[in-house]
Length: 333
Image (cartoon, rainbow, N blue to C red; front, top):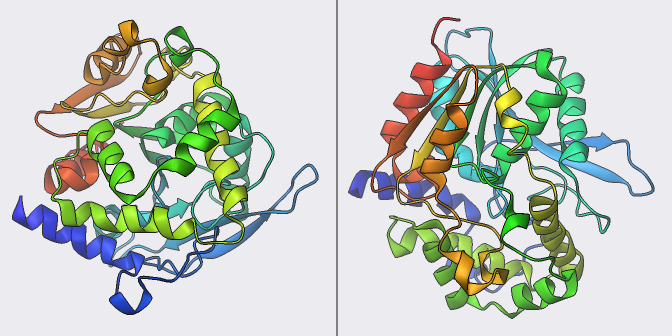
């Protein structure tokens, strides 16, 4: 655990937590928030809003194997949290492309509604701009929902898929009633540092030490100091509405690519649980069991459950996750 925590803390130090900067606000494009590799911006076609997509494009270290991995982040995380995964993949000869989806990280924060179809189109536009006809995907949490939509909509562009603790394994509309955006915005705005820390630890069943979580909490609080914070908040809540209203669970059985679910045995994350009736909340988020049931209906899927691990598997079980991921990606067709 000490080694894992040390690596995690080192990766999160990229968030810029020195005392001299502690009082400074981040911009809603995470200005002031350091990423581990150079960030490039892609201008995207849009309907009325000028949008830019931030991404890192990391070349292989040593001998290249000719393959590219696309890393897709979760809702509460900037793509910089992939830093340990990027290192191991690049070290194994992969090119690694790591975008911030529009609405997240260093990318634009539109005020209009978000959709998985829109994010899928943006991601394919990025691959086109980089002349990448076919990639593998490693996706975490909300990124898993996006990975499913990309693989279903553009099947010839995707070879293999690793779904790390994906959400969307159930239709949240079956448990959670429609909730007004303004109510969710007020609830999110009300969170202070202690409440947000408790939310991360509880919702994600994190096994990380408190000091490893502090940079995430600080980043969230420092964004609140931006003059454009209301825009960030609306985009963030629009992403919740996207997750709630656009299920992908019904699409998963149709995926033909090899798929590996990597699940934390302690992960019971279920977006919207706080807005569900009390009597149904306990039935939400049985994620490892849900993944096993879905994989049994898929033509080429398997599940590995990491007992004692929560929602952020690639950081909580760093070495085991890397071994499992590389073994799956390197398997013969």
